[in-house]
Image (cartoon, rainbow, N blue to C red; front, side, top):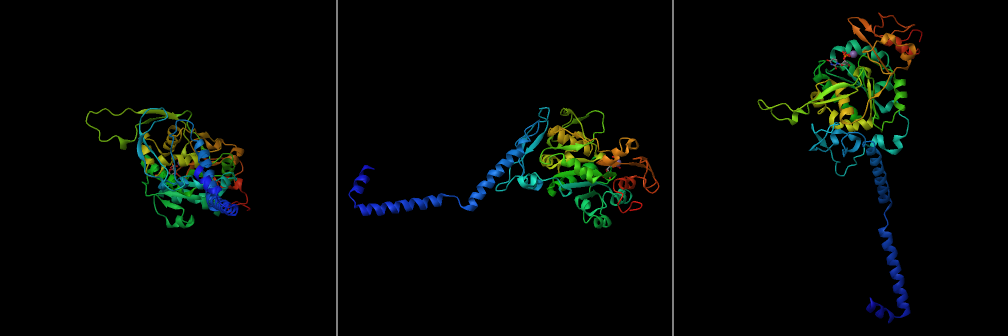
Length: 409
Ligand code: UDP
Ligand code: MN
């Protein structure tokens, strides 16, 4: 340093001035090069926002006995998930009872579910177009149960657009009627655990790919009041974990989890069976309809997709609605939010007052032969029970007297 200063001091002042100017210019150019370009700046800003989004999104998963460090790829779609490494996990009781999978983010891909969690999208009001409505049906009910749905709550193009039927046979007629929303799952057409769980796995996977804020699932003997459904869903956040439905039992259901049989290997003769784990929880009965928020559904994707869900049903040996609750309440630690305005035919429907019928989100009926044995009873019904055995037409006219099917409309 000292040597350089000595050499400088022997130069002429003009030369020193010129060298100084050149030096300052070089510094200026260097500073310009180091500043981030417009595009880079935008990218930095967006990755900061994404980091905040991830934080907000993951924040809600820190409660309860839910698995941690589960990451999802963009849209939270199953097919984007990287194949997991098998890791030992835990149940909500803290015992090592089964293996589960840990998912890692896909390289060079944003793993933020983009549709429901972008800031500008999250805070607007939920609309009908944000809801995925799944209807579970089967071939023998195509012509007996579906027509009244199309005449009543499914009479508008806007509702049909959101609704997908899941069945076990092809039907060109209903494919046309639903604009292709009539999906043959090729599951067994039987009211068995296997048949129902296979179908529910398909419904879940299709919902997940839709990217919608809410997944609402109903049976083909449900009347869905779309206006009341919207009101209900607008009072809950789709980006928090919600499991909405009706409990039809007077206490929690107790189930025995035998673990994932795929992990057991071949049983040797006289080898004792691994211990069963007992657990209890409230579940939403499928016959009253169930709604699940996007945030929760994304977390369920490890267990509820069409490849995994039948194994969950096998673990507890119970049908689809209880197995959905097993994933949500037992594995993920999210409780059922009980909705009194959702009704199944497991309750006595004739006891409902007109106001309860008007406020209902879902209603149902149960038929025995040609006669409805459990259905809503209205004081001044638009149709008699011969024309309207399910009472859905009369309910629809009570709610929408202007609808095409209603007398005097
Ligand atoms: N279901 C089905 N496959 C069958 C039988 C029934 O997917 O083999 C569907 C049916 O379409 C309905 C739901 O399962 O949406 C419940 O069936 P159902 O109302 O006959 O019986 P519940 O369980 O209500 O007594
Ligand atoms: Mn039923």
